[in-house]
Image (cartoon, rainbow, N blue to C red; front, side, top):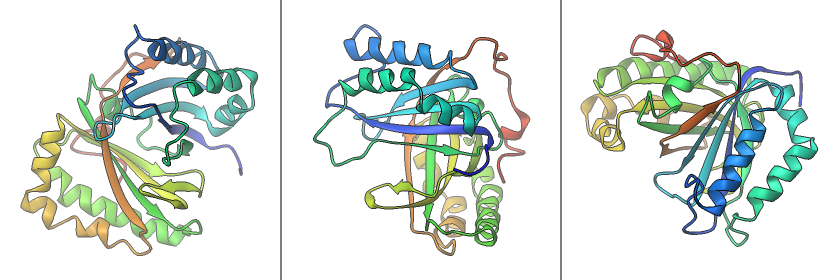
Length: 256
């Protein structure tokens, strides 16, 4: 990987065995995950960890980790602690699943995405991923960002239920395409806050959505647009500031 990137959020998917609730701290899986999270929060550069089962497919466990820099995260992945954490959680993975586990980084803005990812501020988060080819260049990304901004301004901001957004480009160019993991590439990831899944689905039935979604669906070079929902609990590393509302996440701002 190239030079270290500041203010990144790692997003990781772990495919669990059917029926396992890793957020139930009284279960063996929950105890294992809690131990891993507590130890990870002690690593240099970690700021906050968010965890949730995917609402649409609970066998997908999602971990989002705010890092000071990509170098901190990469150093952790080379450590003995990381190897032991993978082994501990690995006991609850589904070895027969065709859905791949992965862990990638996103340069999120505004950072930190706490206001839109932690369910104390956002009961539900829509994770919207736009997939692009691995060689998607800077000019193409700028054009795509303009279209995302138009969707936010003309679509999302028309909804009284929308709570805010953080978004950005993947650091890596090999993010698996959701639903077609034989493909991979660059991803533009958006964390969009809603009071409920129902509120988001209601928005999708409005004229504001129907008249603006073309801004996203017609981005040149788009491979696929996919989305799912999470409702994350989070833990902060020792010494991190207390949560506060970030004005840029609110209706007047965001990543675009």
